Length: 570
Ligand code: ATP
Ligand code: MG
Image 1 (cartoon, rainbow, N blue to C red):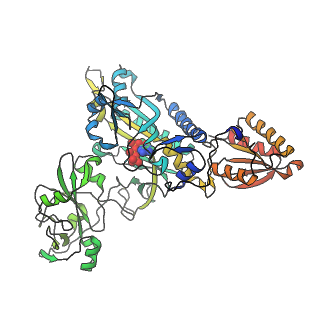
Image 2: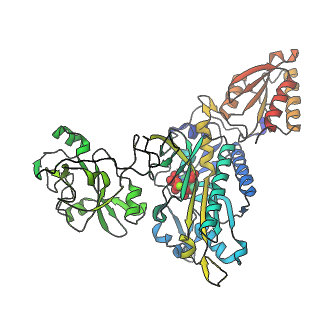
Image 3: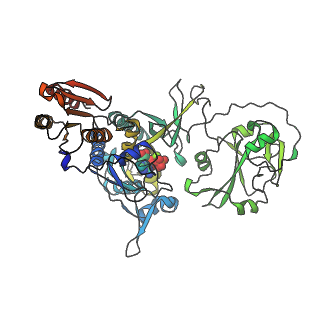
C-alpha cells in the first residue's frame, strides 16, 4: 500500500475523554473514529487488525470442529420470552418496535437464537455434539460506556454454543474450548490467565474468564502463587478463619452522636473496624423485597454472591431508599439487625456470625448496640457474602493469596440445560424419550481484545503491535522524498517485500522525515526500513518497533530479517 493512498488519520492529541492509553492511541493513530458515546467506526488500519484477530479465532475454532454461521443482530421478543430473559435482562437490552408494533431487540448475546437453531435443525442425536459459532456485532446499552473499545455499546464478539447429549459430553466440549481459547490468546500475544468465574444461578465451577493482565482492567483477580488457584473477585470463596471464643457480654445501647460510617465509628470507639458490623440495606426491585446484608466493618459486600443467594439478577438489585428505611421504622446510618422489622431477610456473612460482642446500628437516630452476638440477639441466613481480598487464604491450598487486575477478554460457561429446557431444545434417546441438550457457551470480545493488546504493547510514542496482529508488517521510508537514489531503493525494497508476502507500506508522502517517523511509531508498524544518507554505500536502517532497536544493514539483510520474521508467524 502506498501511504499517499491510505486514509492516514494520525493526530497529535487524543480527545480529553480518552482516559486510557489504548483508547487514546486507537484514536490518535487513526484506527477508529468516534460517533456517539460507546459507538465507533473502524478505519482501514483498525479493520485490518480486527480481521487479523478474527483470522486467528477462525483458524482455531475451525480446527476444533466448530461450524461458523452468521446470525442477524435483530432478535424477536418471542424468543426472549421463551427463555424468560425479556423481563429479566434489564435496560442494557436495546429494544425496538417495527412499524407493526412488533417488538425486537438488538442481540447483546445469542443464546436464544442458537438454541432455536439447534432445536429446529438438529434432527438426530447422531449430529451431537455440535459446536456452532459466529463473529458478529453485539449491542449492549451499557450504563457507562467507557475506555473506548473496552466497554462500548456496539462491539464485535465471537460467540460459540455447544450442544451435547449429556454432562460428560459437555465436559469434553468445555475442555476443548478452554484449550482453543488458550491457543487463541497466546497467538494474539496477550499475557493472560484463565480464572474461575461466577456462574450465577447455575452454580458449580462451570465457568472461566480469560483475563488479560493489566492495571487498567476492570476485574480484580484473586490468585494463589502456591497452587495456581485463580478466580474473579466476584467468584472467589472467602474462607472464614475467625474463631472468636470471647464470652458474650451484656447487650448495651450507646449514643454515638453523628458517627455513622465505619470510619467515624472507629474514631468514636477507638476500636478497630473488625469489631464493627456494616449493615447494608438492599432491595430486589422485581420481588419488591428488602434484604439486610451484614459484613464486618473492614469488608465489602460481594453483590454477585448476594444476588445468587437471593436468586435474583444484578439488574434488579438496588440499595434501599429513604422510603424503604422509613417503612422499616429504622434510621439511615444506624440500621442494624437487632429488633429490625421481620419483613427484611437478614443475610449474615460467616465472619459476622463468628464475631463476638460486635458493634451494630440500633435502628434509632444516634444509637448503636454494643456486645451484639449472632444467635443471641438476632438471627439470619449465614453464608459467604463478602469480597475476597489480598491475604485471604486460598480455598485450595490454604496459603495467603494475592490480587491483581485484569481485562476480561473472553468467558466460557457451562450453561447445562438452562436454555434447552426453557426452549424445548431436545433430542430423542434410544428409549424414545425427549431429552434436553446440554449446552455450553463461549465468548471472545474481539474489539476488547484489540484494545487489550495495545494496553500490553505500547509506549509513550505509540503502539507496538505484535507482528501477527499488526495492520501491516513493515513500512519502507525514503528519508528525503526528492532524493532519487533513496526513492528508487525504497520502491525496490517495497516491491521485494510485497513479492515475499510481507504486508508493506511505502511512505511516498511529501513530508518532513521527523513527521513520517513519528507517524509510523504511533501507528506501531513492527518493522521500518529507513532509506537515508547511506543508501549510496549500500546501507539502510532497520528499526524494530517492539524493541525500538535500530541497526544499519544492507538492504538485502533488512528484507531477509523481515521475511524470516513474517514466515515464523504462528
Ligand atoms: P463485562 O463483565 O465486562 O460486562 P460480560 O461478562 O457481561 O462482560 P460476556 O457476556 O461474557 O460479557 O461477553 C463475552 C465477551 O464480550 C466478554 O468476555 C468481553 O470480552 C466482551 N464484552 C462484553 N461486553 C462488552 C462491551 N460492552 N464492550 C466490549 N466488549 C464487551
Ligand atoms: Mg463475561
